[in-house]
Image (cartoon, rainbow, N blue to C red; front, side, top):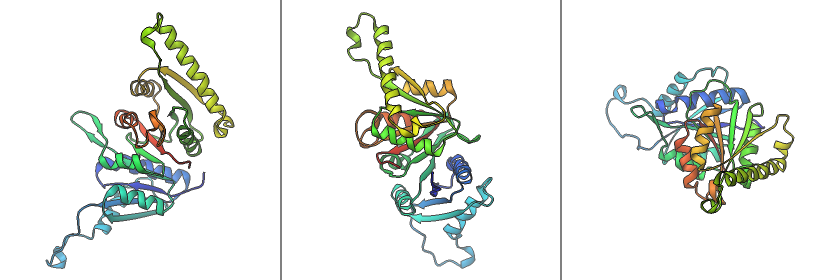
Length: 285
């Protein structure tokens, strides 16, 4: 994979601390540039008070904050940008203009309820980004080692798998597909029907993998898990059982997991899963 720059979108709050740590680690691992972007929505204050009582320059303050929060970033090729405007639009525009290979962002946490809060900016990024998006939720404890790719066997799922394989070739990969049982309510032996449906889905998923050069030529086998049921419930249970540290999701175009504007299933996965998520939307690379 070519060392394209990484763009970290941050609001400089604690919600992005984990994203900063992950982005720093990836930039060091991939030996690429890290661009830290903070977008301010409010207008710059106009004041005629004495210069020594004026607030610090926001760009200088943001850069100082980022440098102060960096851990393990010694020798890193780093650039800090502070812009004004609508955050998602500025982030997407800067990522495309700079030719970034990855956008990294974080999520908020409701500490009283222990739940994750997927913000408006993150939702908009996932719907519109042409650059792969990494939503960081967990504290980094090393490189990604166990990756689950949620697939509906569409071309978008293929591109998402290829993008993940290129970025984390040393990780263990599992492709997961949630199958739907047709007319289950009319079957005499519902369990047998579900097992047969899962077997057929697994066979089709292996055919799907065999047609992807990056997967077929990989030195390590890619696991296949196919079950019948609701994708969010099944995937959440699989992530917890496996201790996976990243879920990959392809979006954009088609149906099911790949709705044109990040369908309700994908939104549910982004909000529900506590693991980091790598979102690749609708265009190869």
